[in-house]
Length: 284
Image (cartoon, rainbow, N blue to C red; front, side, top):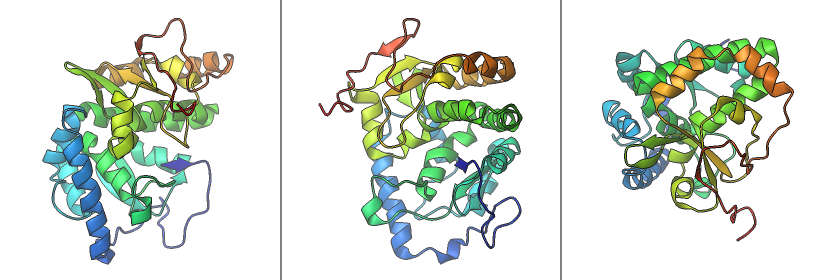
């Protein structure tokens, strides 16, 4: 939800927040949310990590219409001390990290048009709120997101934003988790996408590889299609522990001297849950 630099939009506060202005949503916009929600809610049970479904329930996100950020934040604050704040679009890296470090999740307030049902370039309120917010009700994941924000503040001074962004991409946006009944989804970019929710778990095309911090920071990612590789964490507790216990400065230095890896790469030392055919990328 960040970009390297931009000018402060008219009407935005110094921290780039704007009023959600919930009353301005039209019946058609609320209906679009309900359509997207119903489609994902019917398909995700048995595919998504149980913590995500617990968050949906705790935050009462099954109520019709686009959530009111004020009411949603009150429930989220009671659970983990987080809140949701509206922004007009992508925000600069420093702003994004500052919000996360202070347990504020920035969310776009617009919703996609009917012709954008399955794909849009900039994250909308459905991606940001349905995809991200339920897991912020989980204490371990909530702490991870704050730790990531604090890490981002340090990464900016070390010239390592691109490396750290890969961690966000392959965990928060497109991560898988190894549950007791097999792999499950948790990344917001997957759980908010009907097509990728099926592709990430079921399709033979992508690799599914065990989580490794250094490996992820070397790996490029796709922004124009489904992922060629997904990384699997063992638990949110382990993800948080590794983030808190790792000194990222030496890690950035080590990675800087190593070649980047293509999104479909598989290394000899990888723990491979599934070796992908890459048929989607080859047109097969």
